[in-house]
Image (cartoon, rainbow, N blue to C red; front, side, top):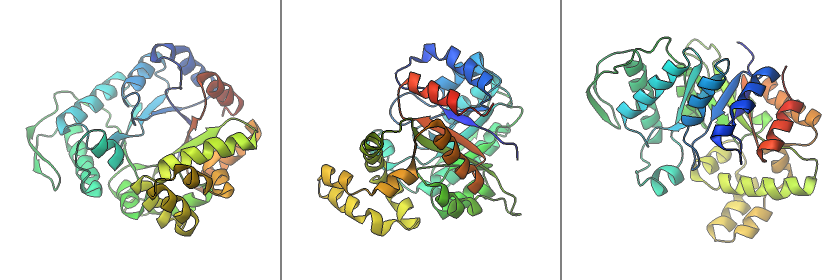
Length: 321
């Protein structure tokens, strides 16, 4: 499988219109991919549309599009549009997202997440291939939709996956998985599930959180707060319980549920911060990312926890080229 090296975009504090030179520099530095996110700031598509125009050499991908927050037709049309903007250079990443984004922020019931992702994947396979879709899936129905845009070539569809069921779906029906908030050692637990029906490995994209500093106190401060923010979300709590961290994280979860955010944050062990946050000198950061690759990640996509200047300086220092 081709070795890829991505970057999570856009950069904090830099207007979208000012990313052109950043994207061009990333090409020159040897990066192959740009991966966007959608969790309360920019949408997943717009930064990639700009990248397709400014740096078509880069493959772009969504990490991720929540399957609940767009109707079937709208989702297929947006994907087809980006495929047309950058043919052969767009990877679709879909996932359930979380109850916070889907239910609290969008007012949509967060029901049957596995089934909803599976049904959306199956719908997209048919719709993007130009088929007329009339189908009653378990979680939604489509009656007589045919996409009015030819999609050629077909984009790979990856699934954001945490535990066994979604990871298997990513391998058997998807073209790979998108993972995050796990350690390099955890990849060894996750990767074997992401395989085709014949056992063929599939692509594994990992969003890796990088804090470009050698200040251990700052790492503890920022890292603990980031971990508390995510690992108290039910889907991530269940993921880390599955990974075997239930005993380690129980004090944090208990304090969080009791409403004591300070005690919850303080209960996060230093070792977990070091496992989930990549930090230190450029050499140390590069070596830590390589541990993920050695464990089975095919496409690392660092998300730099810092402003645009810090992000670009770090990416220059760890560039693959």
